[in-house]
Length: 448
Length: 173
Image (cartoon, rainbow over all chains, first blue to last red):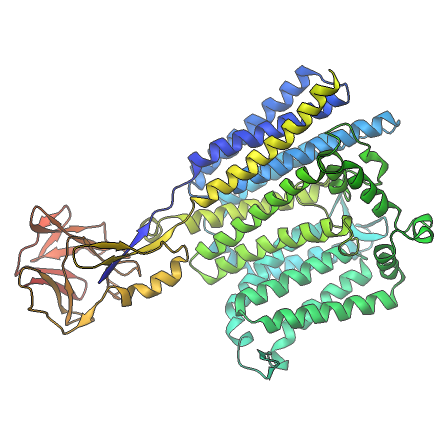
């Protein structure tokens, strides 16, 4: 004889307060350290920056208490920390550029994008009262995602920057619709897979102890594979195609629990990558820059210059870094966006960079925890998919800057300069907070 | 503004960063939730490890509740039993110990009733000062004791019938 009792989860809003206090302290002290070490410490402006930070974080916390009281206690604090470190580093690079006579205002723009992103995250939490209503928009989301992905190809509004055609111009500003398309695709994949996973998990031929799907069930995988390849070819955006395809394979695995999908997916991607490398020059040069980064001829031709400068920067940071404001991160091209991780590696060292990576791991773990806690299949797939987008994006960018995989042009979530990425990732956090609220809500409240 | 203060600030910031990481992980450690199975042995309670995989446990619960069909034990007359006398689980008998019994549709309840008229957590039957009481847990369709709707805890005597949807529960020896 046994009784089964539920362990009530703590709501976590109280546990969140001390974490947020540390997160805010990190945000403000990072900014203060940059100013102190570059001899530009102005207490008045630091106080204003700190005041705004505290006000915004408190407002978000109060909104969580009001609209999602059971939401995850750790997620928001981790994201605030990453965002704060990113803002300080971008401000630091502004200062470095100014010393070299290049006037930039990346930090203030990024702070504005952060505020917009946080406001939209709160709006997401309020508007999406129940994440399950998103399932109604499965196919709408699929079309929105596809249109978003293809918009940059349209003549007139599409913009090509540094060889990648992933921007569109709206109201005089440039926007990366691909960043928002990824959220739409997660909703679409989750809705599609929860309806069709039984077919996809059906018995098929057994090879090497793994059950492979039937050929006719491989349609969706093939379509996404072709879409990812097309993005890679026409928009020259290796990162987004890798992100999109990886996300789909991961969600297929979550939906069907079959390793064969992962084997097939990885195999198809390798085939695609090798094909693209042998057919298209721009992909081949990425591979050369990756495999032979330190060859003098490759470096001198400029192919791997950015990558190698980033590596040198991280190496000079060593174990504990030069300290915020004491390094020379501006020597790496695009130190504020593509190579923000190398800049952080230089000034915070291995110790700081590992802390940042741990924060990412915690965020991703919380997404998976929400997926486990949620009671319906759609919610599980949605939370797991959103977690995988952050995980894959982080891996692709940081893997690229540390020369684990070829360099691609994605943004480091919450750290790198870029409005679209910042807003899109805050919306992802809003959705995850909403899902975790419903996952952690005690059953008797959920039932009524 | 010497070299010393620069170094101290540099390490201070890294320490602050790790304090956040470690305290976040500390919060996660206490974030186990889900269901817990309490084994009721002879007068001794063994606590099984709390398993965070709530769903697995929820599926198990029906088996672990020890719900046995049609086996009324008469070995120990002092121990009362809760018998289901009508409804889908008719013939089920639960031995009553000192722990309260939760009746509802949720997998986490002691007695799981799969009935559309039964709420997730429907009612609770619990001992107090030697007597058994029944209490409605805010169910949608109500708990009825002898035709009267139950709200606050009311005594549940031997021979009384508690009705929940199509299910009737009675106390027996």
